[in-house]
Amino acid sequence: MKVSLFSRHHASSSRHTASARRTPLSSPKRPTLHEWTMSALREEYVASGRARLFEHLQNCLARDESALSYAEIAAQLKLTEAAIKMAVQRLRNRYRELLRREIAETVSTAAEVEEELRHLFAAFGG
Image 1: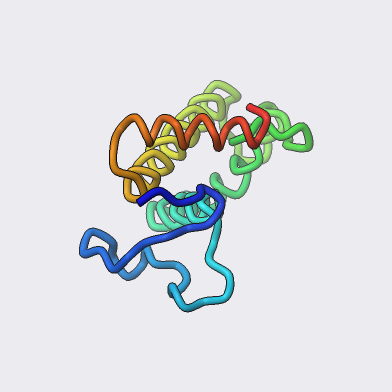
Image 2 (image 1 turned 90 degrees about the horizontal axis):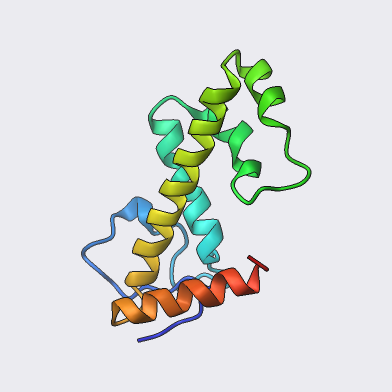
């Protein structure tokens, strides 16, 4: 079954843990795929003791113009700029991995995953 990337959909699947279900299906507003993915990333960073790093890097995910520069983030976190660049790359890779996995749960084939990703990135102008 194909669903929009802009609303999160899951039937009762044994592959999802209770923590993965952020909002009950009966909820009037389910999180978007982006919101769900960001929430999952935040949980991972918090669980690994890197919540502060996530808070600084999350705006770098989409190359947000209002985001602090890598140098500014590095200074605030007392890290090198190279370490921040690597952390942003890892964050983007993990985001992409979670996003791809979640889309795969809503479509039937790998080709549909790619189609949904193209649609999503086109919608965001990227």
